[in-house]
Structure formats: C-alpha cells, structure tokens
Amino acid sequence: MKAMHVGLLAGLLVGLAAVVGGFWATLGVLCFGAVGLVLGTFVDSGRLDLVDLLRGGRSRR
Image (cartoon, rainbow, N blue to C red; front, side, top):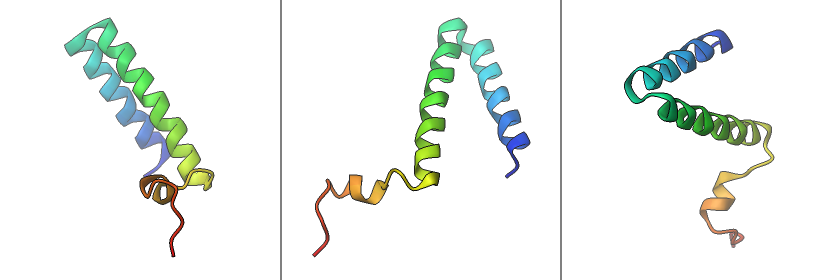
C-alpha cells in the first residue's frame, strides 16, 4: 500500500472521529495513531522484536 493511500485512510478516520465524537475523540485518535506509528516504525526497522516480548523475554531452548 502506498504512503498516499495510508495517509488518505488516516485522514478519513480522523475526520470521522471528529464528526462522530468531537474534539476529544479526534485528539484520542491522533494520539493512538502516533503511538501506532512509532511502534510500527520500530517493528519495521527490527529494533523491537514482538516474538521476544510475547514470550516474556525467555530464551528458546
């Protein structure tokens, strides 16, 4: 999926939150989106290993 499409989808979702929930819902959506962006960046770059986190940090034997 191109970045343009992701941006369009994100904008539509934030706009929907603004119409349905008002200012605070829009602010909440933007905050959760920022957290998702940061986590997604770390996962894509390989700095965050979700498998290790889900196993509780135990090494495989």
